[in-house]
Structures are given as structure tokens and as C-alpha cells.
Amino acid sequence: MPLMTGEQYIESLRKLKTKVFVFGERVENFVDHPMIRPSINSVAMTYELAHDPQYEDLMTATSNLTGNKVNRFCHLHQNTGDLIKKVKMQRLLGQKTASCFQRCVGMDAFNSIWSTTYEIDKKHGTHYHENFRKYLEYVQENDLTIDGAMTDPKGDRSLAPSQQEDPDMFVHIVEKREDGIVVRGAKAHQTGSINSHEHLIMPTIAMKEDDKAFAVSFAVPSDAEGVFMIYGRQSCDTRKLEKNADIDLGNKNFGGQEALVVFDDVFIPWDKVFLCEEYEFAGVLVERFAGYHRQSYGGCKVGVGDVLIGAAAVAAEYNGASKASHIKDKLIEMTHLNETLYCCGIACSAEGYPTEAGNYQIDMLLANVCKQNVTRFPYEIGRLAEDIAGGLMVTMPSQADFDSEEIGSYCHKYFKGNGKVSTENRMRILRFIENMCLGSSAVGYRTESMHGAGSPQAQRIMIARQSNIEHKKELAKNIAGIKE
Ligand code: SF4
Ligand code: FE
Image (cartoon, rainbow, N blue to C red; front, side, top):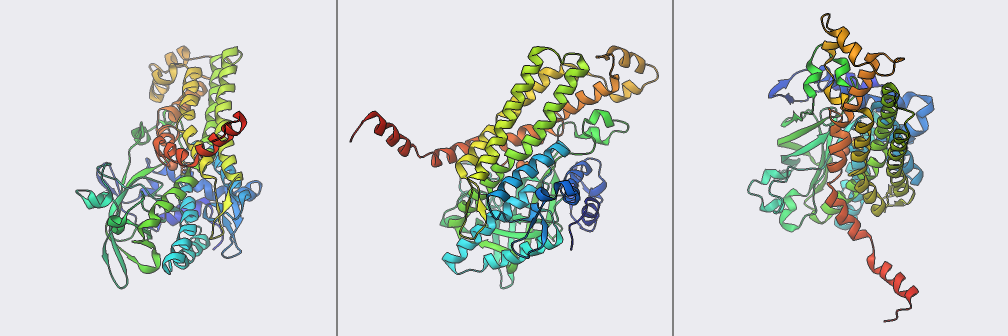
């Protein structure tokens, strides 16, 4: 099948019987649900741009499996150039949507499972890599969106999976059968899960032998028997249910999405299983997926940052403050922080290296530094955007007030800034900044920057592990003339 268009992707979701709950109720038509649709539009952009000749080089690649042209989101990175293009593609999509476009988790899962299954088979004589090759060919040929799902609810953080009072706190194997396995548990904070055709499940932490029933990786259609999703609510989400509140939404067309995905005794045939009890590889898979996704943030968050910097500059103009030197300096600072994140994303890609299976892995230290910076800089960029925007961003009346026959004229009069700009446009840009800093897209730009792809402490552990302090001590001793 050729690459899908955005519209074809949206239609393909309609064919699924994905079981979705919002506000405690089953949603039959999730594709047109006003709270969900903006997040579908963001994924659709990953399809749409692949057809635009000016983005073809970034958005598509030649599959090493089939030789066919595929969407880069389904591609195995074949060299450092591919890793760099991945980051550039993510920046582009952030610029086009100002939100999380959700499809990266699948791409990051493909690349980590590809190399890990190769190594498991080598050690154990299993056939996971072959299973996965067939699965990925199917994904590429059908241009699917896949939720790469890692984070379990985790229960009591001081206890290993096998020590939890409730074993369902981690996805686990409840039955091994001749034709496959049965799994139970859930994955939390799942980005784009409702908008994905299938789910690709991975373990969430390194495991020991006692935890082997929890060391499991598999693919499952999103509408398989026993799978259902509970939509995660976002700040200001009910504005999407209001009539005539387009401006109040800030970003009417695009958004992100997270959900709790429950696996209630789901059957998985053997050919869709990529890890089953080889517990010593759980940690490897986690590190690789997290590493790729920490690289990803050096692209997507930078693209959203570009839009936020632009919005702050527009707000300054509309407020009549664009010539003030402190405003110019704040825009410089925002740009400096944003480009620093991009530097990290590009650097960990340029320093990538081939795995035994042939695809390319990012530099782990630099990818973790990248994500550690992402846990901080978007907050500072957002703080500066709020500083430039001014308090009106959070005290402005609703669109309905501006539209009111009785009081609308007062709103337009008293909220006018720069005389050359309509009050409506000033309102639009301030609401857009609100959306990214405090509203529904703040899920992606702020808190996801903190906790997505692992919380800050997870990167510090990896940085400590990779930092090679002994080598640095030797360097110092050599130059200082210390001989021991
Ligand atoms: Fe992609 Fe960024 Fe969303 Fe992760 S947070 S899925 S990298 S857009
Ligand atoms: Fe994320």
C-alpha cells in the first residue's frame, strides 16, 4: 500500500473498534469526539507532510527491509544521517502542530526492539527477530501508527514487579499456551494510544529472574478483545466541548493525547511475541527505547518552542512593546535555550553508532543530557513567554463576552493594544500562548517535558553511568603530574 494521506489515516481509524472511555462513558465515535479530534489531526500531519515534495527527504525513507519508500516514522535508522533527519522531522512537525504528534513512540519502539530481539535470539536461539521483521514489514507496508508502550502503573515504587501486592501493576504473562500467551496489566500515560492502529508493548524496568513473567514484549491491535483505553483529561479540555469557543481554545486544530490502556487477559499469538521471560534483556530494551525517545525531545519540543517564541514576539508587537530592549533580550534568551536543546538532539544523533542488528543507536550520554535539559528549558521558555505576553493572557474574558451584543464593544475597546491590530487578533495570540503554557498543550510542552521519556532522575542515573569519571580523573592527574 502506498503512503496514506492524512484523510486516509483518519478514515482508517474509523474502521477500528477501539474501546475508548471519556468521562466514565464509552465513546462509540472517538474520531469525531471534540476532545480527541485535535490529537488525531496532529498524527494526520505526519501522513500529510510525507506527500509534500519539499519535505519528502525528511518525512520518508527507503526501507532496508523491502526497498520501498516508507514514512520515516516506520523506518529503521540506517546511519547517523537517518538519526539527524529524524530529529529535523520532529522539529518540523512541532512547528506545524505546536503539540505532540504522537507517532514517535512507535518509531522509537521499532528501533529498540529490532536491535534487542537480534541479541536475544543470538543468546537464546529464539525467533523473536524474525517475528519482528515480519511485523515491521506489515507496519511499513500499511503505513500504520503504532503506540510504543512502555510505562506500567508501577504500584509501590520500592517493590519489584514480582513483589507487588497486585501483580497487575506491571503487564505480565498469565498463561503460556501452545498458540500464544495471555497477558494482563495496563500501560499508563500512553501517548497517542487511541490514535494508534496497534500497540507495541515493552517492559518498563530492568528485571531479575523472579520477575521473568513480567519480561514481555508483544504487538497487539488497538481493538483486540480485552483491550480498552481511558482518556486522560487535560487542563482546559472542556473548552473543546463549548460552542463558539474557537478562540478560547488557543489551538483549535491540534493537540496531544494520553490514555490508560488496559489489557484484561488479552491473547497474543506467538508470532507477535518479541520477548517472553528472557528477563536479562528487559533493561536493555528499556534503556534503548528511553535513549531514542530522549533524542526525540531534542526535535519535537524544539519545534513547539519555535512556535512559542514566535507567538511571544507577535504578542509583544500587539502589546506595542516589541521595541523594548528587555523584550528583545528575552526573545534572544528563549532562542538560545531552544537551540541548545536542538544542539543536543543533533549531537546525540551525529555521534550514533551501529548495533549488532545493523540499525543505528544514538549516543546514550548525549541523549540523556538532551532530555535532562528538556526537563528545564521549556519551563524557562514558557516563563519568558508569559512575561512577554502579560497578565491579560490569564484574565481576559471569554470569546462569548467579546461576541456579546451588550458588552462586546466594551471588551473590544478596553482590550485593544497596538492601534493597528484588532482586539480579536490580540486575543487569539494570547490564548495560543495560554494553550501552550497552561492549557491543553501544556501537557506536552511542560509536564511531558518533565516526565515523558523518563523523569529527570532517570536521566541523572544514566548520565552518572556514562560519564566515565575515572577517565576524567586520569586526565587531570596526568597534566598535574600526579603519579601513583
Ligand atoms: Fe513525539 Fe515528542 Fe510526542 Fe514523544 S513527546 S511522541 S517525541 S511529539
Ligand atoms: Fe513523549
